[in-house]
Length: 188
Image 1 (cartoon, rainbow, N blue to C red):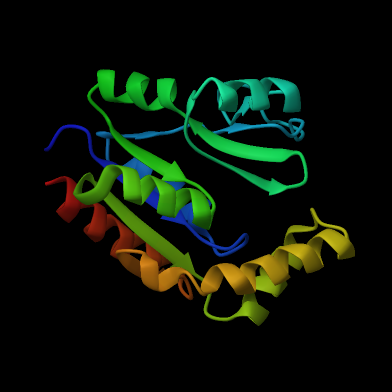
Image 2 (image 1 turned 90 degrees about the vertical axis):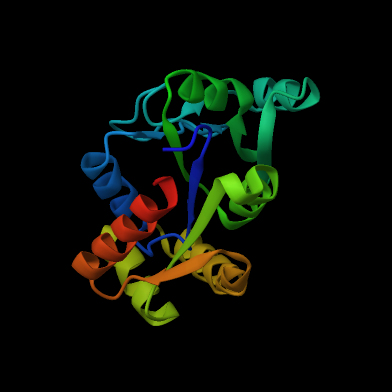
């Protein structure tokens, strides 16, 4: 296995990338999840340092100014997400292949940084309509936020050609196996 490799997953919200990433982490011991930083409040059952590094907006901006991020994005007004350089260094020091679960812009920035040492996988829903159904069934969104996510998802789908490979998640088992084969081949 090559040192300092990264697997970068991205998808519109509700496409299933987090489910696929969790599966891969259970299957391949060499993988380790990169915990992103964000400026939002923790949701119920989320823990700082496990699900995200939860930072205040001011702290996030301060770390941006101090160049602590490999990539970052202001996804919505004062809602920041990013990858801390110290997180990447920590995981590589442990000899792990890093797995990222990030938004489209973050994924493309990471791919640009890692180049051939990064595999960028776009998880796509079979259709925007299916994606909207999945988001509705979660029951975590009000109508306004759901409409924002669906609109954003449609624009994110336009970026999939910039990724190394697209996995269409119309059948979860098939998505698991295709992703597993892609990752195993990449890490050697």
